[in-house]
Length: 213
Image (cartoon, rainbow, N blue to C red; front, top):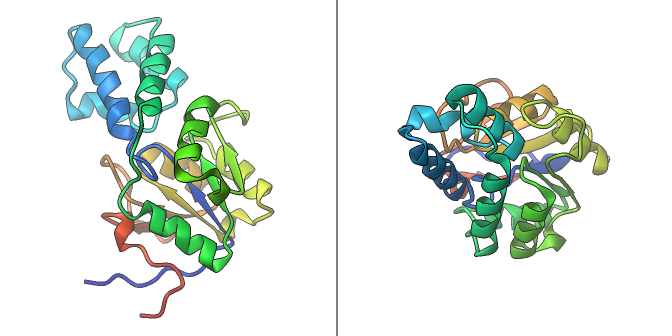
C-alpha cells in the first residue's frame, strides 16, 4: 500500500544515528559488549534505554542501573573507531535528502553524538547537504529535551511547528515533539506512539514529501 505524501515542511531536522546512517547497531554492539564483560545479559529490554542515548547518558545508565562506573571514555573511543571505519546510509536516507534539496527545503542534522562523530558522518553523507548541525553538548540540554531541535530550527530561521523532524528512537521523538515539530518516525526500537503530529513508517524508502498521489 502506498502511503500518502507528507506536506512540504519549512525545514527538515534529521537525527543521525539509526535514522540517516546505520550507527545505532554498532553503538548497541559496543554497549552489549561492555554489559557482557560485566556479566550482564544484553537483552532487548536491557539495551533499549541505551538506544539514542548520548555518551554521558549511557555512562550514567551503566552506573545507575548496573553499578558499572567509568565507562564514558571507553564507549566514546570504541564507538568513534567504528564510525571512522565507515558506516552506511539507511535505506531511503539519501533519496530523502535529495528530495529536500529539490524542494528547496533546508536540512539540519540534530544528533546526540559528539561533534567529532557527527563530522565524520557529515563528510560521508556530503556536508553540503546540510545547512546546519547541532551535536551533543552544543545546547544547554540534550535529547530528550527539546533544546537541540529548537536550536536547529532557529539556525535555519524556521518555525519549529512548520518543521519535520526525522527520528528512530523514543528519546529523539520526545525531543522533537516537545519542540513542537511534526515527527516522521522510523522506529529502530519500540516505544514511539502514533499521534496527531507523528507519522510512522517502516522505512525511509516509503516516505514521499510533496509528491502527487
